[in-house]
Image (cartoon, rainbow, N blue to C red; front, side):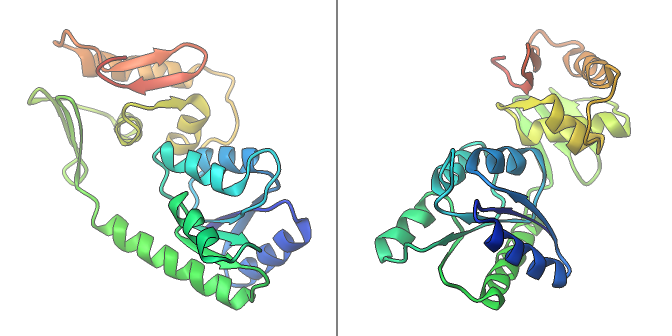
Amino acid sequence: MKILIIDDDTTQARYIADGLTEAGHLADHADNGLDGLHMATEVRYDALVVDRMLPKLDGLSMLAALRASGNDTPALVLSALGKVEDRVKGLKSGADDYLTKPFAFSELLARLEVLMRRSKVSASTEPTTLQHADLEMNLLTREVTRGGLPIPLQNREFRLLEYLLRHAGHVVTRTMLLEAVWDFHFQPETNIIDAQISKLRAKLDKGSEQPLLHTIRGVGYKLSVAG
C-alpha cells in the first residue's frame, strides 16, 4: 500500500514512515498542508496520515479541500486535541479516523489497515458504468457510446476518457493526466497529451452539435456539457 504522511514534525514523520516500511508499505512525506494537498491530488494513494496542525494550510482545511475536489482517499488525522468536539470537527472536515497523541504505532497501523480494507470493499461495489450527459462507458465490456452510437477507442484513449469521466465537471491538469494515464512523473518534450486529446475530442464530438471535451487554456482539460 502507498501512504502519504503529511506532518511538519520530521522526527514523527520519519518514525511513522519507518514503521510503515517495515510493515511492507510505501510511504511519501509532505511537511506542510499545501504540498500535502498537491501530492494527494496528483498521486493516487491508498491512505493519508494527516497531522492537524500544519504550516501553510492546516490539516482539516486541507482535507476539506481534498474532499471538495472529489478525492475520497481514506485519511487518518493525528492531533494532540482530543476533546469530543475536536474529534467531531475532524471527522466532519473529511477525516475517516482520528487518533490523539501520544499514540502507539501499532494502533496507528491497525487503524490504517481497517481504513484500507473498508476502501477496498467500497471500491468493489462501484458501478460498472460511467456516464456524463449522453456519453456512457461500460467498464466491463469496454464499450463507449454517445447518444446510443458506438465510439471505437484504442486502449490509451479508453484510459484517458475513463479518467476524464471520473472527474467530469472538474478541470484536470496535464500533470494529473501524465501520471494517471501515461504513468509519467515528468513532463515529456512532446505534445503527447494535446495530440491524444485532439483525437479523442474528434471521436466524442463526431455527429454531435454539443462539444463535451474542453481545453481550459493554461490549466488543463474538462469534460463538461457547459465547457
